[in-house]
Amino acid sequence: MAMRQTPLTCSGHTRPVVDLAFSGITPYGYFLISACKDGKPMLRQGDTGDWIGTFLGHKGAVWGATLNTDATKAATAAADFTAKVWDAVSGDEVLTLAHKHIVKTVNFTQDSTCLLTGGNDKLLRLYDLINPEAAPQEIAGHTSAIKKALWCNNDKQILSAADDKTIRLWDRSSMEEVKQLKFDTSVSSMEYLADGEILVITYGKTIGFYNALSLDLIKTVDAPAPINSASLHPDKDFFVAGGEDFKLYKFDYGTKEELESYKGHFGPVHCVRFSPDGELYASGSEDGTLRLWQTAVGKTYGLWKCVLPEDLGVENSEQLYTSPPEIKA
Image (cartoon, rainbow, N blue to C red; front, top):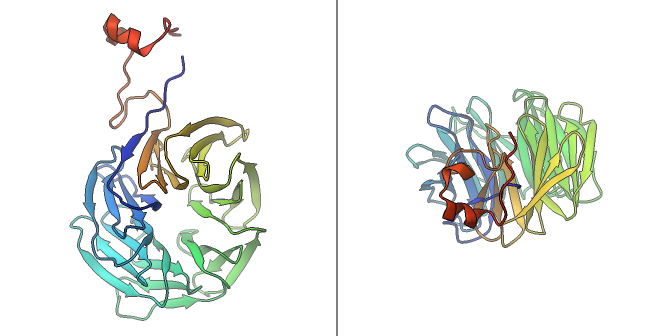
């Protein structure tokens, strides 16, 4: 009998959840930050979804949120024309970075000394966090609002996706465009995996995998519905995707076969990401919730506990199984 996926629901937000990000693995576990249109990004324990705190200070919808690797700093991008940097341990606001329009995306370098931002004014900005009073470096080129911008190639290059239906690769030192990809429709999401230099993008019903250094296509997979976000497992054996039909899909990365689909959200899925250890993936939705899903259903991990039939009394086992379970050694 197949085990049933039981997602953990993380409530607290009052509007759609539009972005989420995990930290790396720290001595205290790993952490999860969520961006929401309610203007109140939240920090949670990554493996359980337990609420740790809310970052208060934005005066508009928060479109992007990220944590640095060791979860000591957070950054958020908002509709109040600012990006903010926060102390993720105390929750205190450290910096407010004024922009000329809505900010959509924020990303730290690996050493947390530089913050990359992008948004509706079509410019990429590089802020020196060691010297925050200095004017940011600016990179122009996109002709529409920037949705996502990420450091890549050991922070020597930048990847950006915009509503001009392009993804562009930039060189950090020269500030010049190296290469671009053009699409027939706007790119809805972008994920970068440093291990293997893989870029995961979604557009329409398609999930595309590219070499992040050359932007050469590796493969594309078509989903049953328009997809808003996708994430590749750290071991690169499968990936998950979510979108307009409220479902989470899991595909085999090698064969492209759809393995499973789960419905738990009550609105479109806006964002999905694997945890750094690959044991779970988190999804954020129009319904205002985050949900945590097990990668290996039935495994004891976080708040999930595997209960074997022999651990149950007869009356309990009858509630779990309508027919005697087949247990294969």
